[in-house]
Length: 382
Image (cartoon, rainbow, N blue to C red; front, side, top):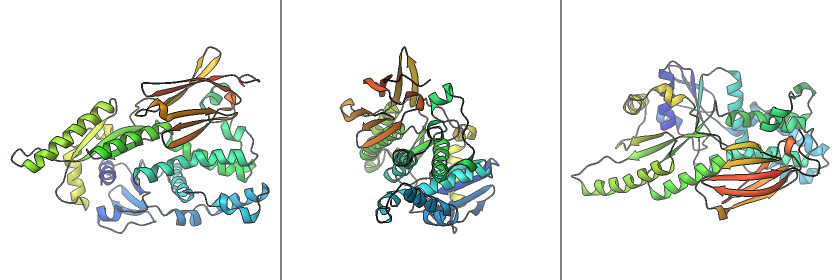
């Protein structure tokens, strides 16, 4: 509902807006009371909508992807009988939804693309896939370093290298380039942000904090918290007052832990918000006192992943709040660093400049993990 309302509000500004659903349990058609499917449909003035079907996207938009992938496996000497374990990657179908969104952005037909995502676990699995698959490709297939780590922050600073011409790339490099495009769009903090929707309940609040922590771990930009279904204060009703007080305590907790992140509070509606008229009323009630430019601008809440020089060393700083330091484990490798936080493990490819460096020390304080990297035998490649 909230993404649909935002899309409608965006269109009301005269901005050409596309509302995209990546949730396999699609419900855009229910909110707009019209048929919305795998083809883009007109949903209102300046507003289009689509419910992505990753299987159809793979067949129609990226038919060469799997052929190229199988060709790479063949060239790497992987036997046909063993290829299933490489082609059936958990969540691989979600990658095509992300690639489609990237394609739609590159086509430039829309001023804004608003994505309605699935519940947290499914969405997190989808968002971490491009980086994870890129890492596996680096390990399994021989590809030039320039095509891989060129876009890292340190390499861009110290090595003025251009991305090789796509026509000169082999299949492996083209697939990797596609994955890099997805990552660059999703992690562009000037263009893309994630907003978390929650309700003021104990289990949901705890899940929201974990979700925020994991999104930070994977370097995604969260710039808004939406607290939904807030019960009004009805002093003549003991039942509602009991729940009002419970919710108020959790709203206070959210305000205390998510300092610096804009928070919008949305009241509980006794009826379903369905149809354009109901969505317009929702927008009028919740957005009328707010500048729409503030809602749709990407609000910088600070970097969650930075490299800084510290004398002869480098420090990789990661923002990973809401976790005990005993739940964090850091392991250094020749070309990457593995950071485990709770139940999630992210392998961070080191920029070419820092490959071969050693994890000298780690410190976790005030929600920030600092990893001190010391030069390896060959020194830093600057």
